[in-house]
Image (cartoon, rainbow, N blue to C red; front, side, top):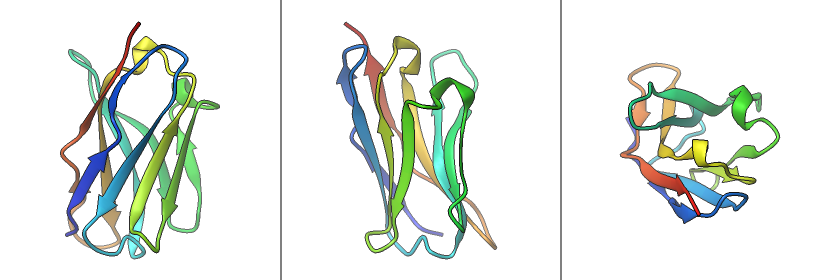
Length: 116
C-alpha cells in the first residue's frame, strides 16, 4: 500500500485556478485507478475525477470542462488542474490509488477554499 501526500490547496478567488498534486511513495503504474474525491462541510464525499490504467478519465458533471486530471508515472504523481473555480468547489480534496489487488490508499487531504 503506497502513501499519498497532497499539496497545492489554498485560498483562491472565484474564477481562479489551482493545481493539486498527489505524490505517491511508490509506483502508481500497477494501480487500477487513481483519482480525487472531495468533501465539503455537511456534505457527502464525492468522486471528482479519476484515471483508469489505460488512460480513461472521467469527471463528476459539476467540474467537466473546468478540471483536468493527469498523472506523471515517472514521478509517481497525480495532478488535478482546477480552473474557473466556484465557491461550491470549496472542500477538502483527497487523492486515492486503487491497486489491482489489495486495499485502496488515501491521502490526508488538502483544503481548497474559493472565496472573495
